Image (cartoon, rainbow, N blue to C red; front, side, top):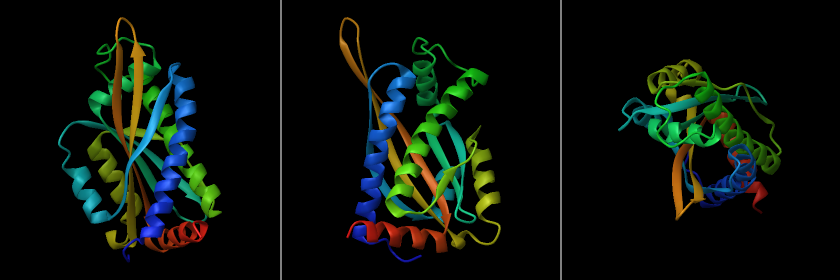
Length: 212
């Protein structure tokens, strides 16, 4: 796929910022304390590069696979966080003390998937509104990183990896709590969505058109 233009990248960043604003309201209600969700970085990469990153993580991670449907065979999206930060996020959602969750049980899985649903759903909703292209998030599943690699390869590499392109958006979730002192924590999540090249080009053209 050709290089993304500056205008297309700017439009994608604007979508990510708008979706972060939308998602932070829902996350604040879910966690029951005010939070801020900020877009930190947006980039486009070839799937070969993404597969390398996923296959060789520097630390244990949790990942939620979120299939995308809509206009044709879309692809998949994945929300990735370090295992430690995923545990802490689940603790916040479940109103548990920090460090109290150590195993991925059913309740913790549900909390992480709900968070992924909110972030991924907000992004796709804003992207659909901006481009006029239907993008629908399907039922999520949570898995180990190797399972996610296998799933993305199975779903998107039926032909060749050159038929797909990956979009990565890094979000920072900032939570400020006050007891005797005020503390701000940041949880980093990586939202990646993979699309067939032909559809990715269509999406980028629609993004560029929306900015004019």
